[in-house]
Length: 158
Image (cartoon, rainbow, N blue to C red; front, top):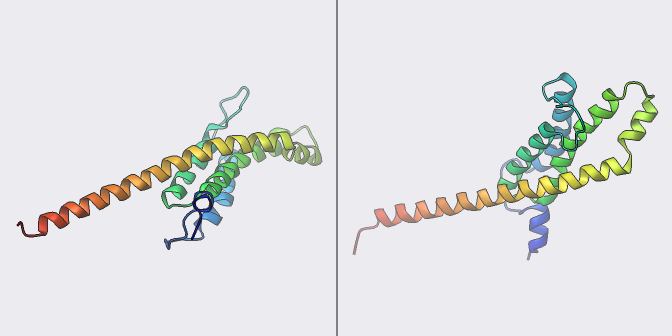
């Protein structure tokens, strides 16, 4: 029997299309966020940025989709983290042009920054997972109810 904690963290093991999507989503979110900030599709409003809105929105949108497919919390967290990390990579590698590559890499990999992104990913990923999971449950209930009503209406009355 599969534990409820395992299902919540990793998702259900029922068959669904594109089972590899949960593995591809995080690196793809990183690349999309990195490229979008690098070419100017996503922008930074300026000032002190605690939450890069565009990267967070990208990660949350993909995490909601994964949760709707019944993937777990871990893929949601990793997807949001990867999107936020894409912003961070652009910031450190393109935004700190006066420093050497080694200094930029050290700043990018600093534990305090990575942990801060992890906390953001934990919060946003959990909210995204809740939204996607609750939406999936609601859609299933509506479909079941619709099927019950259509079965009842086609069955001859007594």
